[in-house]
Image 1 (cartoon, rainbow, N blue to C red):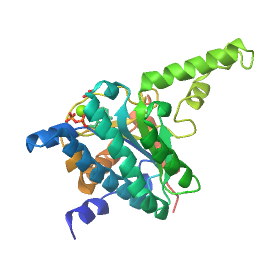
Image 2: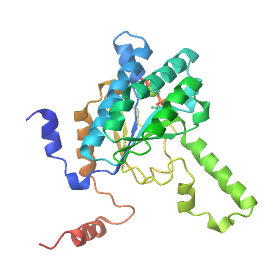
Image 3: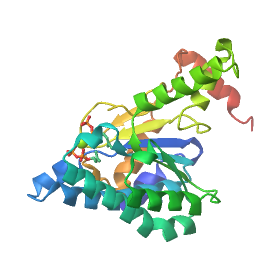
Image 4: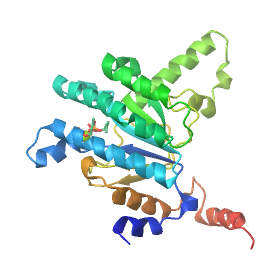
Length: 260
Ligand code: IPE
Ligand code: IPE
Ligand code: MG
């Protein structure tokens, strides 16, 4: 048995996270360490995306959300932004036949009109071409930040209230969730950040209220299926209490056990 199979054999398939979100960080440092340009790190990062999607799909995870480009990343040197946009458009087009074959549905999340035309066209084409797929849903966060998303939702709800479509008392947590870019998607169970930083960098602030956080020093281009499987194992060893006591959670689990 190889190492990956060994780790997978220890994962409980009945307690998988439904939704995994990943902050894919460390491309630049990966390239730096090898004395190569940062763009090489981003190019290598595409292979890591391929592995993460394949692994999620094979494991039967329902939703995978990838932080590919933040609102703040627009402030990077123009040359790096151009490279990233080129790579994103190129990679999505190259991967599309494989994604369709594997029944992966793409959903774009973020300020998509801000993406340069060429990459945007390829992304929208992939979203359309996979709209019928019923396997893994892959949410691609591009030109995304959580504060942008929450401000957008606030503007929309305020407009509806001003127009009398809703009243202010209709604004519940559920209505706010339904007005975020991730509407209809369950909150992430597990959030992974590679690259060693232990921060959220404006990602899914509302949605991760009760997510399990997993930080790894592994740089994104080095992130293997083994690393992903280890993160899931770690997740399965945690007790999610959602504000309750450990005894309450364990009682509920015991109630759910089949009586055979
Ligand atoms: C993540 O890697 C990719 C993006 C943010 C687009 P970085 O480019 O942030 O790599 P580091 O953090 O500088 O190593
Ligand atoms: C977060 O990484 C954004 C993405 C992975 C797309 P950054 O590299 O931009 O985050 P900071 O600047 O280190 O917080
Ligand atoms: Mg970074």
